[in-house]
Length: 80
Image (cartoon, rainbow, N blue to C red):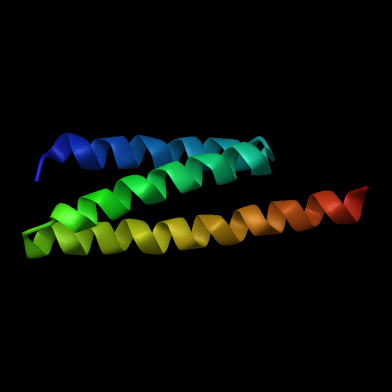
């Protein structure tokens, strides 16, 4: 599997983190969906155990980021 594919995922995760830091839940959620789709595609073509391990690490990270985004949405509704 090409390393640059994981580089794309890594930069996408960084964008999600940046959106969360800006408290931009909608942008973060949209990017999260995009990165999740990239991971699903990588998973479909993964052949090596190392690739599967790396994909699962990113899936766990995306789940944690999703919880942060949900928290941002909760903050937005309670502060209005």
